[in-house]
Length: 317
Image (cartoon, rainbow, N blue to C red; front, top):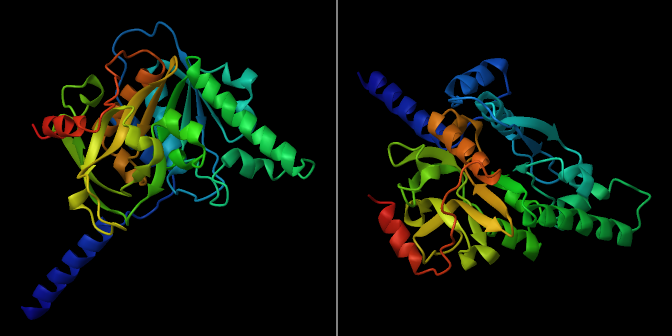
């Protein structure tokens, strides 16, 4: 009897520990089939396809779910039928003549190296013919090309670690709505809806979802609150914070205007297992439709931090 009880406790312990750290797995056709079955379908005919670039290059930390995330976006985009997708790891895609071919760019976990936090600068370092001055100048030009692209009406979807791509650039941070600060250990996060009535979060029928993820914290332009928050987490439910956090509500997904363009940021998720959630797939599709202009919604910013109380109240309906 004691042996049975011990075994049960051991299994319970294993279940708890593994729940806090999702195990990486190879992208497989079987998993892709599962995602395709969960992905939303288009109702009605497709009038015009929008061209989407998925950019998955990284020069710093390698997120194991990069290929999975790319496959997920490609699957939901193509199954829905309104999008034609091109994938690339080539920074030449950020030349002006290339960017203009796309209605939106999807940045997929494009973590840059810690030295400069500038992915373009990192990659250009592979070209031995460039002087340091030329390398810096060209890196800035590619970043400005992206800024101008969005400012002039292009769409931008930024997924999880992609916020680190140009993390020391004030202009990049202002376009995205914030810069990456840090994250505690992976843990269960209860993701909640800021305003359940907002069309973009209509995907979540039960008021949010729980999953294991890295809880991202942001700084710099984040505290301007110049975005429409969509998803949030509560900091008093988290473990491993590096310092006490005064504001209980931390936004982890939002939308915003940048000039004539539109930006969608979604921190979930570090782990591919999170995509085995049909509601999250629909949310990502909604975000993609928003940035290309197919889904018109309220994207007015909070502007004042005082609005946080209003939004957190709505999220607890």
